[in-house]
Length: 436
Image 1 (cartoon, helix red, strand yellow):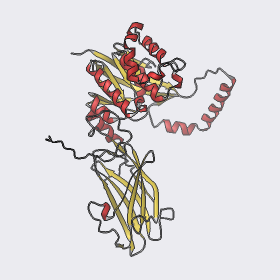
Image 2 (cartoon, one colour):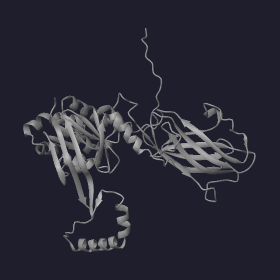
Image 3 (cartoon, one colour):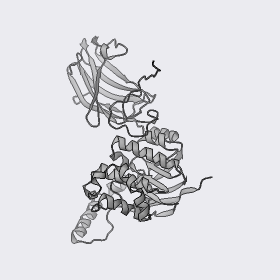
Image 4 (cartoon, one colour):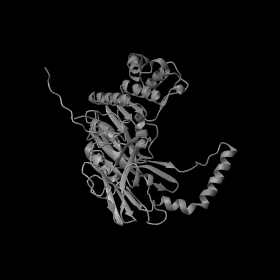
């Protein structure tokens, strides 16, 4: 039976809100008095917003509350949760960067942390000097660091900049070196925050491969990541956090499914009141746009990558005999044009009998089905175009609605890196046969 590597017993951490009350300069004292006056003027507003959460308490904010967690040596554990759930604070406590307000923390062995870009680096020192500095902080002998030095430099791929001060490194270069140092100085516990998202795709794949290798060597690894595919395929266990508390832990598949079910909301819908403010022409008026997915007809703002989704456009035809073509344009969060489609026969797997046909006055809904395993995991924006024919947009509602695609780990199980970059990730037919 393996021994415990990490144990947290009812760990809580709180931070004081606002200034601490000690002033080193006259300007700070003046600023504090101004803030105090503003707080008194808006006291009712502030109190009303804070009373909705038990994380606020008489000028304090509880980042963590009563965390109870044990991790065995050799475990690879993913920590999942929304922004502000307390994940990073937990890692900082385990890294001994901050101390808990109450509770007990036990970590066995040497800890290597990668929490923020440049953490543990002195900006005025060169990359070479920082490697030795980090090793010394971890309690290693200079001879040990020297023995691993070449492997660190090779992994980080920054040999040409090794004698350049770290303050001149790009964020990607700093992450490369930081991870190489943390992974190659053989920590018993390796803690990785979302910082790996700064690196490029190839380097993320390299880092996650190294993390898997360390896990096989019996090292304990904690990973905080919104890359659910990496959590699903790399981790053996996962923990779900919410509002500073540990909700549950279990297998990555169980935790990811629960996380996504709680992340889904009913805001995947945008509607307009049928008045002068609604987007309209003389012939048609837009009433709403909604996103449906995950096997439900209820509007959702977030869909799973392995589920079909539907974009529904609701509109009123205002004139008898009007012909209507409904079109959508999809762009990702970088502005890249992903695709354009319409309910025309050449763009439809099943002909729409209403395309290019006269409509009677009344309400209509046109739906576009987007197959599962098609879009990448990111946020997308839908623009709606309605006109008498394809290519003609008498009515254009730019970025009418957005939705988020989640990678559940169902795809790309052979690859644990980030798939940031491509705008589509279709599941295609591949086949191999021996040839003469």
